[in-house]
Length: 185
Length: 281
Image 1 (tube, one colour):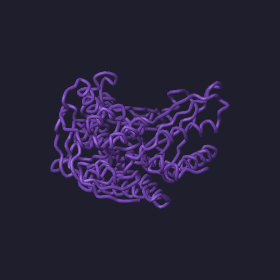
Image 2 (cartoon, rainbow over the protein chains, first blue to last red):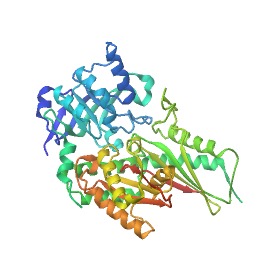
Image 3 (cartoon, rainbow over the protein chains, first blue to last red):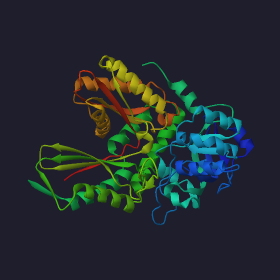
């Protein structure tokens, strides 16, 4: 299991070096978006309009955090199910998205589009929101504030732990992991 | 007739919502520690270490274990000799949830008008309330914050009566396998067998309130649970679906007599952050 310290935004060199199943620590900026923000962004692109954020080279973290307690910048902030973003992911890849962080696997269409657009999908540990919130050192709402927890935030990550799920070579850590450990009863 | 005031019910629900979000039950922590000892996949071990560290941090700092603080599911076992006084029970339950989520800095995840505007209700209300009338003069309240990721993987079918154990086993395995990482394994699988369509799903969820390791009182069901757990763990899905030997912490079966023509089977999955808090008034 290779380990990498990665500085975001993702460069092509870094993307080429990653293999499904590698363990990574991510530092740098990501945008947050969930279902409602994805729907709006893709509708905006379909109308031929500009997105409210610069998606080129960016990484999106699928998260809707809990409200910050007084004196904190953020509450719990673990990943949500990535599959729900599948219907919106290809248009964002076409617009320049290079990375995504979520939990659970992606459909075949997204997996092949990731490879085709030289982008990667990372798994973070779902249900570890308190711990992962500690790896977030900056948060600012930058678009769709009316969506509340689903608003787009610009977040700064520091040593945020994740696993490469889909690499640009067609590798899928979940498929490989299951195949390795599946056995007859 | 013993009297219980709605203010006491409201305050209790408020407290339980906040505690449930931050304090992982001891049986779940124990089951995760056991899974950590048994797991063989190196990546899965790292995942389980993060999950256990997360539970420690959440407990020490009263932080929500997960950002998805769930749909608030309330199970009420209401003694038939209890008289609820001072107002409307359901208003009190909703008020308790609203205060618990607002003041506890928990995420409001409930939207109104589910097929159209999907407007957030801002305080996670209304809760889902299941009430059973039971003997006695006490009111037991259980609060289960149920995450969307695992609830979305619920499945229901009505099989031919002849499908029996093989049919149920195949259905559960397919459900867990296709769900992959979405329900946040290692999971607890609740399996409701028999009754009617809606009762089977209720049993599947209610079965999740049983502590991990508490034996099913029915010997045949207990044996079936053990077989199902081995079969689920043989799938290789593993913690967070990264591959591994520990896909489930438990399989909990609940049954009810059913129609001669039917074999209803419902599966309701619970994530590793299996939050549950109760109080008896």
